[in-house]
Image 1 (tube, rainbow, N blue to C red):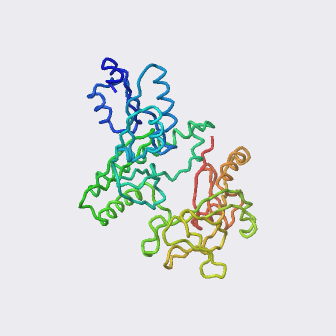
Image 2 (cartoon, rainbow, N blue to C red; image 1 turned 60 degrees about the vertical axis):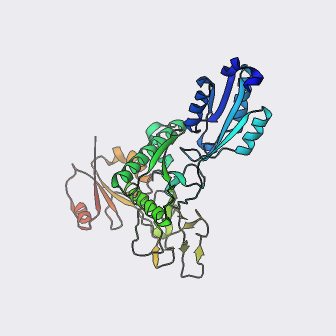
Image 3 (cartoon, one colour; image 1 turned 90 degrees about the vertical axis):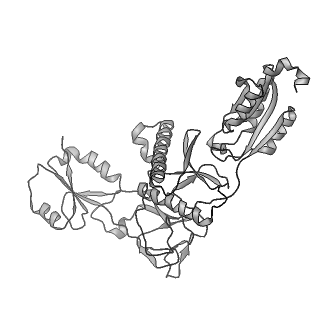
Length: 383
């Protein structure tokens, strides 16, 4: 190349890679005489799994040619160090051929690890000996809108910050325990944990032990609501109950006529989840990952191959309200209670599940009845 353009023009040569390309490439280019300003670390993103975008490479090359520079060398990577991202080598080579650019392929990893725990997200979907993942929080994104108003960008930023913080705590907990030693990386603002299986003496049992350690520490940070430790047919994270909508109920109505809340159950397991397993209308919806089905009051839900069967029962929340300023607070209180699908009554009934009481109110028979019935007692702040 120097024979073609002249040695005096070495300062015009340009090297291309991505922001995930190993730093040794840039250092090597510098040692070879390439000006540091002529290394192009093309930006990647989570949307394309942190691989080098083909069109971004082409537009960068065209901009350099227009500026009088000489495209010289491209480093494509199969398994980047930080995230195991894989560049589209074939397509990149076509671009390089169009501009007579040398290509080097940096192949870093091979192997496979599959994580089925649905609490985790595989950030870069590649089957390598290094898996990059992160633990997801149990709080849905939509529940955080009250923090920042209606700006979706702000909501996403806060959500990502919370996920990053959660995974920092998870990594610290794992490494402090001594059960495993994991590393981390930050790609596109996403904090990821890197699970590397590279030693020649590593056996499958070592991988399983390490992953169980990760899951154990995740349990402490994002626990399941119902835990079954006696049935081996139940996976660590077997299924998830999803609430699609909550509708306020009239506390005087019976459950059979007032069930208006919509639920579904999503299977996350290896052995499946069944609805009404012992009836003729048995439904197994866990044939494939993330399969789901609607559930209604009274359905029998069975998990896995054993006897872990539960009846799904809808118990409406009914709040018995005793306060001195009922009319003044009624509207805002009704909105808060309705948001969780509950109802309000100002008369004590056995169906009441909670008692909201103003501390300034005198103790009367209805309040004593609620206390004797061991109902949940909540105190109102009246301003």
